[in-house]
Amino acid sequence: MGQSKSAADNGNRESERRRTILRAAIDVFARKGYHGCRIADVAKEAGVAYGLVYHYFKNKDELLETVFDTGWSGFVTRVRAVVEGEGALSAKVYGVVDVAFEAYRVDPRAVKVLILEIARSPAGSRINRQTAFVDAIRLSSELFIRAKEAGELRADTDPLLSSALLFGAIEMGLTAFVTGLADSRDAQALERAKAQIADTFLHGVLADASPGAETAAWKPEKPSSEKSSTKSKAPKRT
Amino acid sequence: MGQSKSAADNGNRESERRRTILRAAIDVFARKGYHGCRIADVAKEAGVAYGLVYHYFKNKDELLETVFDTGWSGFVTRVRAVVEGEGALSAKVYGVVDVAFEAYRVDPRAVKVLILEIARSPAGSRINRQTAFVDAIRLSSELFIRAKEAGELRADTDPLLSSALLFGAIEMGLTAFVTGLADSRDAQALERAKAQIADTFLHGVLADASPGAETAAWKPEKPSSEKSSTKSKAPKRT
DNA sequence: CGGCCGGTTGATTCTTCAATCAGCCGGTGT
DNA sequence: ACACCGGCTGATTGAAGAATCAACCGGCCG
Image 1 (cartoon, rainbow over the protein chains, first blue to last red):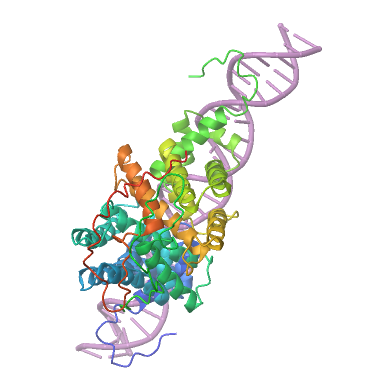
Image 2: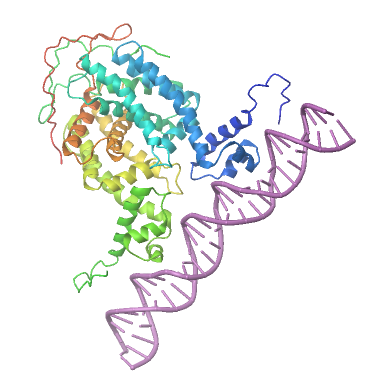
């Protein structure tokens, strides 16, 4: 265990242990869920005494809160960068999808906890985590508001709902991997999923203007020559 | 309290009380969450003695399980009807969206519990509720498999993922109402949300076929005259 | 009338954990 | 050497709440 630290680490030792515990918490939460695990599990996973968890965190809830703050703030920051950056709507949408999937690639467990435990927890404790989620949706909705003014969007779209739908699609896409519906070790699959989410959101699933139209009418009109590629190599954002 | 039942109810009395408890459970779960409530709360809500809950249900978990089975089977049945029915892809997609929103309109509490407590619960107890969710996605994916063979779909779409995305969009749309982001008493808003979800999924958010390919430019300006209508009166399914 | 029986009650028991706390251990300064 | 100090330990406590159970109705049948 304890590596001798020499001198080097004088600055931030205060972490180290705390980090270990936080990491362990993420792993355990991801494996058994917040309610399904005891502090003892976290302590064991971290290879640390039960009491030490309480030395670094006020209580179990603060532990979850911290996991949340840590992971979420990074995500929001990146999303904000995309939203406020240069480029057309399409590029930004792809950028947002990319941020989410990248987060997943880097730390699937953390993303799992964020999605499963936090985004959907009913009125969790004091601090409204729901709020944080809503804030993210609001943030990216600006993207659609501006795009709409610029005429990039169809007229009958509500920006807030569009934003929500994008996140919903991303979340469900990730959930497919989180729950094992899709193989998350397949880098190709991840890439394809990313592309399809962005493409579907931007262009829909239909194979072009569906000529048949059905029953009533889905406005088949589509003068626009070739719809083209679609292969969508959409500009990588990174 | 106890209404005298006269004779009339001879047949299925075995329910009655059980139903009351189940109903109470849904309400309480919706209000405080599964983990956030005690059996005592359910009993009180139902106006029934604590012990009676255990007369009708083996334990707290079975209560949730039952809420799930009850609500979910109905939903799946309706979705199946849509998937296996007649009509073009577009109509069916709208139909699926409609089923979900109708369920919400009829019993928002129950839908809330389904979404918040069950869809996302991490490896809950024995029975895999995740599985049920996955099954629904698989079921509706058949819709996309067939549509793809018929050439209705773009070639580069994965049916399973498409199905997941549709459900993701629906779920997030409903979540917006469940969490109060949008006003669920506004029938108009519900209608619009439904239409936008289906439209976005089928046609995307973009103002038109953006021919510009991507890479460099995403072709901002769109001359395409009137994009118009699109008001989408999409065939009502009911 | 009296005993049975299924539905019903709610106090009691038992379990599970979050949270505490008295003290240990090893490093550091004097 | 000694005393101090902060990180660290884990048995103990106390509360919350799930599940049990013995007793209690009120109808019904013999």
